[in-house]
Image (cartoon, rainbow, N blue to C red; front, side, top):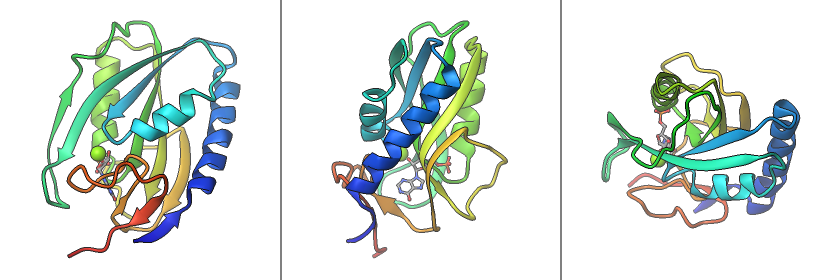
Length: 170
Ligand code: IMP
Ligand code: MG
């Protein structure tokens, strides 16, 4: 598999993102909400570097189904989410692709009474966005390739890789 972003580069960038986030919130308490399952590594690495009073929670949003590259219907499950009314939310996802998932999840969190929602993604894919959406903190901008590793999967495989690699189709 072709390595696109090495484990070292990811760790360096996560350090920088954490510093930006700490500066932005300036001591304010934050509820970090990860979108499962892709947020797994990014969340674990980022929260250990955020020196703020934080709570950590998860939500599930899945559009990719089974062995396909095509996005299907989006399902949001928030049974694991605590009360977020009046809370400042930092939403974490692995990748911004079409933008549909994050648009829907942000609207859902606002609906649940969040005081604010900021978004951090590890990756942003160029030339794929279908709905206008501006994340607040972006790790890396990548070309339009299907990538796996560091939480990102194909059919739930490859999530454990410490780097981001390009999956060859076929
Ligand atoms: P969006 O709603 O199209 O922005 O899709 C976001 C979701 O699609 C991400 O949370 C990923 O789960 C998945 N996704 C998009 N591109 C890739 C990729 O290159 N590799 C693995 N998953 C991806
Ligand atoms: Mg995913």
